[in-house]
Image (cartoon, rainbow over all chains, first blue to last red; front, side, top):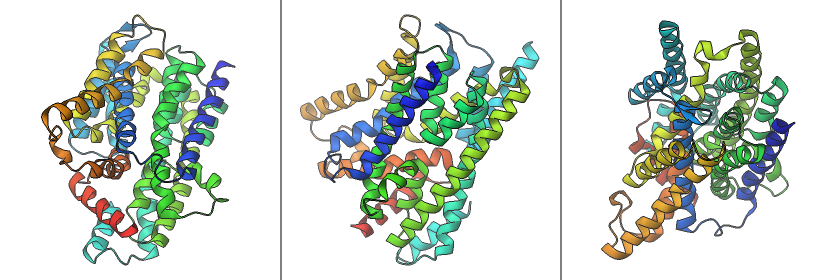
Length: 102
Length: 293
């Protein structure tokens, strides 16, 4: 039930912001400060989410096979690999490290 | 990818003409490449404990990748539905700014806007804004939106079915797909010192507060890194003259312009292909916007 609530709230919220962008008069969101904040907000959220999903296990911080997988993804990004290759590198290296370390 | 050459050619002949076929090819290139990554979402979502209908509902109704990954990640970590949704929502806020730009260049009738809204995302914005004419912009937006929506939902379903068949997705390393997606979206955004500072502070806050705050809340606190860095930059600018962030030059009116032009692109680059050079892309975008005005 909780999951469905989260799905519904997210769906309504995300659709609303998309629609607002198309409907509001030009000028309201054009202020430089608002635009810069909108550009920086995803940077903060994505950085925190990347770190948490890599190093968090519940309320504990851990370094496990996923860290190796993320390192592989970073190398792939550095080499300008396509998106799917980046994700595949992370998955394969994580699986490989888990298989090797038991 | 074909898109690159297609765009480069129009660039050279002044951006005035571009065949419908070329626009459709560009749009399909992005739509198909990104649409396939719905597979990673389907696998991650079911691997995180969501059911198949919940997973498909997210792709059908939310349809903005980063928010979907964020939501299932937060729910898997034990966050309550509202903090989890808040994180996903804040990630989706950028779409409002894409919509703002798109409504100028697409000039859609008001009655059509509620239907077009669901497709206002990183990739459709990047493709649409890269087109030289209104007709090409509309074709680019529609074809990217349609191909991406159909494929993203199909691959979500297949990924979810696959994950259910596999059972323990962690054993296959599939729990690394979510953070890898975030990293791929984030990497092209880290161009200036300010952006790197925001990312660094957010990582420290997100990890540092994890042991002490309820699940899902540390990410929301980490989001405050954005206004904090903006505020610090503003202070320094007032104190030490206009040149705080060298990349932005001095002109205040251009700052917003520059951000808006770069926003969708930064994201789309991460998702779309490896081969794009950021410089060429930015310059091109600037030209296009000039054309639309």
